[in-house]
Picture 1 (tube, one colour):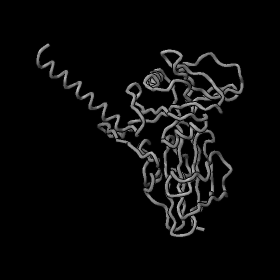
Picture 2: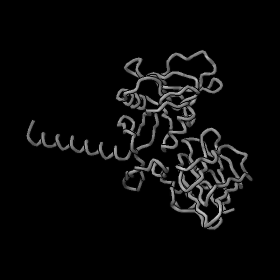
Picture 3: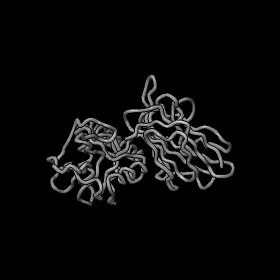
Picture 4: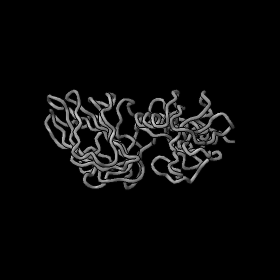
Length: 305
Protein backbone atom coordinates (compact mmCIF):
# COMPACT_ATOMS: atom_id res chain seq x y z
CA UNK A 1 0.00 0.00 0.00
CA UNK A 2 1.37 3.41 -0.97
CA UNK A 3 1.79 6.31 1.42
CA UNK A 4 -1.06 8.14 -0.33
CA UNK A 5 -3.37 5.14 0.13
CA UNK A 6 -2.49 4.99 3.84
CA UNK A 7 -3.25 8.69 4.25
CA UNK A 8 -6.61 8.38 2.44
CA UNK A 9 -7.53 5.33 4.49
CA UNK A 10 -6.70 7.13 7.74
CA UNK A 11 -8.74 10.16 6.70
CA UNK A 12 -11.75 7.97 5.91
CA UNK A 13 -11.57 6.28 9.32
CA UNK A 14 -11.17 9.64 11.04
CA UNK A 15 -14.11 11.18 9.15
CA UNK A 16 -16.25 8.16 9.98
CA UNK A 17 -15.49 8.50 13.69
CA UNK A 18 -16.35 12.20 13.60
CA UNK A 19 -19.64 11.48 11.82
CA UNK A 20 -20.55 8.80 14.35
CA UNK A 21 -19.80 11.13 17.26
CA UNK A 22 -21.81 13.93 15.66
CA UNK A 23 -24.80 11.67 15.13
CA UNK A 24 -24.60 10.41 18.74
CA UNK A 25 -24.87 14.05 19.81
CA UNK A 26 -28.30 14.11 18.12
CA UNK A 27 -29.60 11.47 20.54
CA UNK A 28 -30.98 12.74 23.84
CA UNK A 29 -29.03 12.17 27.03
CA UNK A 30 -29.23 8.53 28.12
CA UNK A 31 -30.02 7.28 24.61
CA UNK A 32 -27.48 5.56 22.36
CA UNK A 33 -27.30 5.77 18.58
CA UNK A 34 -27.50 2.63 16.44
CA UNK A 35 -25.95 2.78 12.98
CA UNK A 36 -27.89 -0.36 12.05
CA UNK A 37 -31.16 1.54 11.65
CA UNK A 38 -30.16 5.17 12.41
CA UNK A 39 -32.29 5.48 15.54
CA UNK A 40 -31.72 6.28 19.22
CA UNK A 41 -32.37 3.71 21.96
CA UNK A 42 -32.78 3.71 25.72
CA UNK A 43 -32.81 0.59 27.94
CA UNK A 44 -34.38 1.30 31.32
CA UNK A 45 -32.99 0.46 34.74
CA UNK A 46 -36.46 0.52 36.30
CA UNK A 47 -39.17 -2.14 36.04
CA UNK A 48 -42.70 -0.96 35.18
CA UNK A 49 -45.95 -2.39 33.86
CA UNK A 50 -46.38 -2.24 30.06
CA UNK A 51 -48.71 0.77 30.19
CA UNK A 52 -46.44 2.64 32.61
CA UNK A 53 -43.42 1.83 30.44
CA UNK A 54 -45.24 3.16 27.38
CA UNK A 55 -46.02 6.38 29.25
CA UNK A 56 -42.42 6.66 30.46
CA UNK A 57 -41.16 6.47 26.87
CA UNK A 58 -43.64 9.19 25.83
CA UNK A 59 -42.26 11.42 28.58
CA UNK A 60 -38.80 10.89 27.07
CA UNK A 61 -40.07 12.04 23.64
CA UNK A 62 -39.95 8.47 22.34
CA UNK A 63 -42.01 5.27 22.21
CA UNK A 64 -41.68 1.64 23.22
CA UNK A 65 -39.49 0.05 20.58
CA UNK A 66 -41.14 -1.14 17.36
CA UNK A 67 -39.23 -3.89 15.52
CA UNK A 68 -40.57 -4.12 11.95
CA UNK A 69 -37.40 -5.47 10.31
CA UNK A 70 -34.09 -7.28 10.85
CA UNK A 71 -31.99 -4.11 11.06
CA UNK A 72 -33.97 -2.90 14.07
CA UNK A 73 -33.83 -6.37 15.60
CA UNK A 74 -30.04 -6.20 15.27
CA UNK A 75 -29.96 -2.78 16.93
CA UNK A 76 -31.98 -4.09 19.88
CA UNK A 77 -29.83 -7.22 20.18
CA UNK A 78 -26.69 -5.07 20.32
CA UNK A 79 -28.24 -2.76 22.90
CA UNK A 80 -29.24 -5.62 25.20
CA UNK A 81 -25.91 -7.41 24.80
CA UNK A 82 -24.17 -4.31 26.19
CA UNK A 83 -26.72 -3.83 29.00
CA UNK A 84 -25.89 -5.19 32.42
CA UNK A 85 -29.41 -6.33 33.30
CA UNK A 86 -30.72 -9.60 31.87
CA UNK A 87 -34.39 -10.52 31.79
CA UNK A 88 -37.53 -9.25 30.06
CA UNK A 89 -37.77 -5.83 28.40
CA UNK A 90 -41.15 -4.49 27.28
CA UNK A 91 -41.48 -3.60 23.58
CA UNK A 92 -44.24 -1.79 21.67
CA UNK A 93 -46.33 -4.78 20.72
CA UNK A 94 -49.66 -6.14 21.97
CA UNK A 95 -52.10 -8.92 21.18
CA UNK A 96 -55.73 -7.77 21.24
CA UNK A 97 -58.54 -10.17 20.43
CA UNK A 98 -56.17 -12.52 18.68
CA UNK A 99 -54.73 -9.72 16.50
CA UNK A 100 -51.06 -8.85 16.96
CA UNK A 101 -50.06 -5.25 16.37
CA UNK A 102 -47.05 -3.04 16.87
CA UNK A 103 -47.62 0.45 18.32
CA UNK A 104 -48.78 2.66 15.48
CA UNK A 105 -50.46 -0.37 13.84
CA UNK A 106 -47.34 -1.49 11.96
CA UNK A 107 -48.02 -4.85 10.27
CA UNK A 108 -45.97 -7.78 11.56
CA UNK A 109 -43.47 -7.90 8.69
CA UNK A 110 -40.76 -9.22 11.00
CA UNK A 111 -40.91 -11.26 14.16
CA UNK A 112 -38.43 -13.06 16.33
CA UNK A 113 -41.32 -14.30 18.48
CA UNK A 114 -40.94 -17.38 20.62
CA UNK A 115 -43.68 -20.02 20.44
CA UNK A 116 -46.99 -18.32 21.14
CA UNK A 117 -48.43 -18.82 24.61
CA UNK A 118 -51.85 -20.44 24.90
CA UNK A 119 -52.89 -18.22 27.82
CA UNK A 120 -55.48 -15.76 26.49
CA UNK A 121 -54.89 -12.94 29.00
CA UNK A 122 -51.22 -12.50 27.99
CA UNK A 123 -51.32 -9.50 25.70
CA UNK A 124 -48.05 -7.57 25.88
CA UNK A 125 -44.74 -8.48 24.27
CA UNK A 126 -41.25 -8.30 25.72
CA UNK A 127 -37.71 -9.07 24.62
CA UNK A 128 -36.16 -11.88 26.66
CA UNK A 129 -32.47 -11.15 27.11
CA UNK A 130 -30.07 -13.78 28.41
CA UNK A 131 -31.59 -17.02 27.12
CA UNK A 132 -29.57 -17.05 23.92
CA UNK A 133 -27.03 -14.87 22.14
CA UNK A 134 -29.99 -13.26 20.43
CA UNK A 135 -32.92 -11.83 22.38
CA UNK A 136 -36.31 -13.31 21.50
CA UNK A 137 -39.83 -11.95 21.85
CA UNK A 138 -42.55 -13.54 23.93
CA UNK A 139 -45.89 -12.50 25.45
CA UNK A 140 -46.47 -11.76 29.14
CA UNK A 141 -49.17 -10.37 31.39
CA UNK A 142 -49.30 -6.61 30.82
CA UNK A 143 -49.45 -5.99 34.58
CA UNK A 144 -46.06 -7.62 35.20
CA UNK A 145 -43.24 -5.20 35.91
CA UNK A 146 -40.26 -5.46 33.56
CA UNK A 147 -37.57 -3.21 32.15
CA UNK A 148 -38.33 -1.57 28.82
CA UNK A 149 -36.72 -0.22 25.65
CA UNK A 150 -37.55 3.22 24.23
CA UNK A 151 -36.95 4.10 20.59
CA UNK A 152 -36.64 7.58 19.07
CA UNK A 153 -35.89 9.02 15.66
CA UNK A 154 -32.39 10.39 15.41
CA UNK A 155 -31.82 12.57 12.41
CA UNK A 156 -34.65 14.63 11.01
CA UNK A 157 -33.97 15.74 7.46
CA UNK A 158 -35.14 18.88 5.69
CA UNK A 159 -35.11 18.55 1.90
CA UNK A 160 -34.29 21.33 -0.53
CA UNK A 161 -34.22 21.28 -4.32
CA UNK A 162 -30.54 20.40 -4.44
CA UNK A 163 -29.56 18.81 -1.14
CA UNK A 164 -30.65 17.38 2.20
CA UNK A 165 -29.71 19.14 5.42
CA UNK A 166 -29.53 17.36 8.78
CA UNK A 167 -30.90 19.01 11.89
CA UNK A 168 -29.57 18.47 15.40
CA UNK A 169 -32.51 17.51 17.60
CA UNK A 170 -30.90 17.30 21.02
CA UNK A 171 -33.77 18.02 23.42
CA UNK A 172 -34.53 18.56 27.07
CA UNK A 173 -35.77 15.63 29.12
CA UNK A 174 -38.29 17.64 31.09
CA UNK A 175 -40.14 19.32 28.23
CA UNK A 176 -40.94 17.71 24.85
CA UNK A 177 -39.96 19.69 21.77
CA UNK A 178 -40.73 19.46 18.08
CA UNK A 179 -37.19 18.63 17.01
CA UNK A 180 -38.00 15.07 16.01
CA UNK A 181 -40.93 16.09 13.83
CA UNK A 182 -41.18 16.45 10.07
CA UNK A 183 -40.66 19.65 8.11
CA UNK A 184 -44.43 20.24 8.17
CA UNK A 185 -44.19 20.99 11.89
CA UNK A 186 -43.81 24.75 11.96
CA UNK A 187 -44.62 27.34 14.58
CA UNK A 188 -46.55 29.59 12.21
CA UNK A 189 -49.22 29.20 9.56
CA UNK A 190 -51.95 26.56 9.17
CA UNK A 191 -49.68 23.66 10.19
CA UNK A 192 -48.79 25.27 13.52
CA UNK A 193 -47.17 22.83 15.94
CA UNK A 194 -45.52 24.86 18.70
CA UNK A 195 -42.66 23.85 20.95
CA UNK A 196 -42.50 24.56 24.68
CA UNK A 197 -42.89 28.29 25.30
CA UNK A 198 -42.71 29.16 21.59
CA UNK A 199 -45.14 30.87 21.44
CA UNK A 200 -46.83 31.42 24.80
CA UNK A 201 -50.64 31.53 24.58
CA UNK A 202 -52.17 34.35 26.64
CA UNK A 203 -52.29 36.53 28.67
CA UNK A 204 -55.85 37.16 27.38
CA UNK A 205 -58.36 34.54 26.27
CA UNK A 206 -58.06 32.83 22.90
CA UNK A 207 -58.35 29.62 20.89
CA UNK A 208 -55.87 26.75 20.65
CA UNK A 209 -56.14 23.77 18.31
CA UNK A 210 -54.35 20.80 16.81
CA UNK A 211 -52.30 21.40 13.63
CA UNK A 212 -54.46 21.93 10.50
CA UNK A 213 -57.73 21.94 12.48
CA UNK A 214 -60.47 21.36 11.32
CA UNK A 215 -58.62 19.40 8.64
CA UNK A 216 -56.66 16.26 9.49
CA UNK A 217 -53.65 16.71 11.74
CA UNK A 218 -50.45 15.00 10.60
CA UNK A 219 -48.56 11.91 11.78
CA UNK A 220 -45.57 11.98 14.16
CA UNK A 221 -46.71 15.23 15.76
CA UNK A 222 -45.00 16.35 18.96
CA UNK A 223 -46.58 19.69 19.86
CA UNK A 224 -46.33 21.57 23.16
CA UNK A 225 -48.70 24.47 23.90
CA UNK A 226 -47.79 26.74 26.83
CA UNK A 227 -50.71 28.79 28.19
CA UNK A 228 -50.01 31.57 30.70
CA UNK A 229 -52.88 33.86 31.67
CA UNK A 230 -52.48 37.32 33.16
CA UNK A 231 -54.28 36.33 36.36
CA UNK A 232 -56.70 33.76 37.74
CA UNK A 233 -56.68 30.04 36.97
CA UNK A 234 -55.88 28.91 33.42
CA UNK A 235 -58.97 27.14 32.09
CA UNK A 236 -59.59 25.12 28.93
CA UNK A 237 -62.99 24.27 27.39
CA UNK A 238 -63.12 22.02 24.32
CA UNK A 239 -65.27 22.95 21.34
CA UNK A 240 -64.41 19.73 19.51
CA UNK A 241 -62.26 16.64 20.07
CA UNK A 242 -61.59 13.77 17.66
CA UNK A 243 -58.29 11.85 17.67
CA UNK A 244 -57.24 8.28 16.97
CA UNK A 245 -58.20 6.63 20.25
CA UNK A 246 -55.40 4.08 20.36
CA UNK A 247 -52.44 6.18 19.47
CA UNK A 248 -52.91 9.98 19.36
CA UNK A 249 -53.02 11.71 22.75
CA UNK A 250 -53.43 15.14 24.28
CA UNK A 251 -51.91 15.53 27.77
CA UNK A 252 -52.98 18.46 29.97
CA UNK A 253 -50.53 19.52 32.70
CA UNK A 254 -51.17 21.70 35.76
CA UNK A 255 -48.40 24.24 35.21
CA UNK A 256 -46.08 25.94 32.68
CA UNK A 257 -44.15 22.77 31.66
CA UNK A 258 -44.76 19.03 31.31
CA UNK A 259 -42.86 18.42 34.54
CA UNK A 260 -45.95 19.55 36.46
CA UNK A 261 -48.72 17.12 37.53
CA UNK A 262 -50.88 15.63 34.80
CA UNK A 263 -54.49 16.83 34.88
CA UNK A 264 -55.86 14.59 32.15
CA UNK A 265 -54.84 12.39 29.21
CA UNK A 266 -57.33 12.59 26.31
CA UNK A 267 -57.86 10.54 23.16
CA UNK A 268 -60.74 9.44 20.95
CA UNK A 269 -63.99 11.45 21.10
CA UNK A 270 -66.58 12.69 23.60
CA UNK A 271 -64.77 15.65 25.19
CA UNK A 272 -66.59 18.51 23.41
CA UNK A 273 -67.94 20.86 26.09
CA UNK A 274 -65.58 19.48 28.74
CA UNK A 275 -63.66 21.98 30.88
CA UNK A 276 -60.31 21.51 32.65
CA UNK A 277 -58.92 24.02 35.14
CA UNK A 278 -55.41 24.53 36.47
CA UNK A 279 -54.64 25.61 40.03
CA UNK A 280 -52.54 28.54 38.79
CA UNK A 281 -52.48 30.92 35.83
CA UNK A 282 -50.55 28.45 33.65
CA UNK A 283 -51.29 25.22 31.82
CA UNK A 284 -49.39 23.07 29.31
CA UNK A 285 -50.79 20.88 26.54
CA UNK A 286 -48.72 18.15 24.87
CA UNK A 287 -50.18 16.65 21.67
CA UNK A 288 -48.45 13.55 20.31
CA UNK A 289 -49.45 11.31 17.38
CA UNK A 290 -48.12 8.05 15.99
CA UNK A 291 -46.87 7.17 12.51
CA UNK A 292 -50.20 6.23 10.93
CA UNK A 293 -53.85 7.23 11.06
CA UNK A 294 -55.18 10.76 11.72
CA UNK A 295 -58.45 12.54 12.52
CA UNK A 296 -59.85 16.07 12.50
CA UNK A 297 -58.22 16.85 15.85
CA UNK A 298 -59.34 19.27 18.54
CA UNK A 299 -60.08 22.90 19.30
CA UNK A 300 -60.50 24.61 22.68
CA UNK A 301 -60.99 28.02 24.22
CA UNK A 302 -58.49 29.05 26.88
CA UNK A 303 -59.28 31.75 29.44
CA UNK A 304 -58.87 32.62 33.12
CA UNK A 305 -61.44 31.86 35.79
